[in-house]
Length: 242
Image (cartoon, rainbow, N blue to C red; front, side):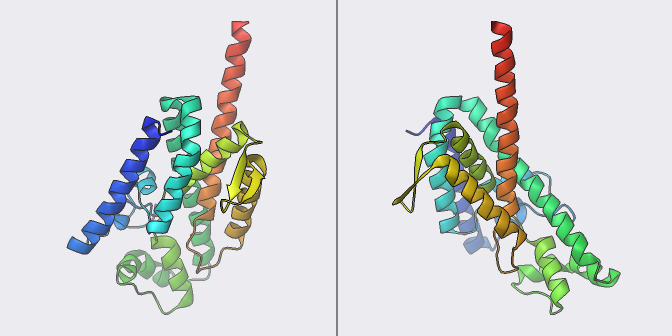
């Protein structure tokens, strides 16, 4: 019911969540700035954030639903794949999600910079993260939007969780998933519908929507590629064993 990798991932995520709250309240230290995933051009970016962002969450609901999905679908996959394969899949999809999000952010930043002066861009890059730390933003709408895109961190295990959801849908396509614990839907259709919803939400993303939709899609994309590679390798091994 709770294989070791899933169990340890749950424990680590909860520890990081409690540490974030504790350090923030006691010492005014924002772990999200340190361990959350920032755009590579930001002063706050560090390479290790490609991994650590997966263990950071923005609130109780965020971590609860991610960990619930990790438990529900992850324990099945780990029992089928084994510990090593599942752990590799988890981190590949999680890191892949971060890379896709960074790529999308690059295009967003480039599109905004076209309509801004060099001085405005410089101010956002050098001072923007300090202003956001004070829960403020620039009065100029373009500078404010660039600041949010450029200096806001990406948090959560959602990219890896979406990769896990895709794997479950591919391996057990006719298994029933109960939406809101009441509405049954086959896993394959659930994955397709959810992926389509994330794509639409990402394309028409509003400034008030703080969900990294393309990171979710990135987790699914990297998961799909990895599963197809594994299946091809398995076919080759089967062919040579015959």
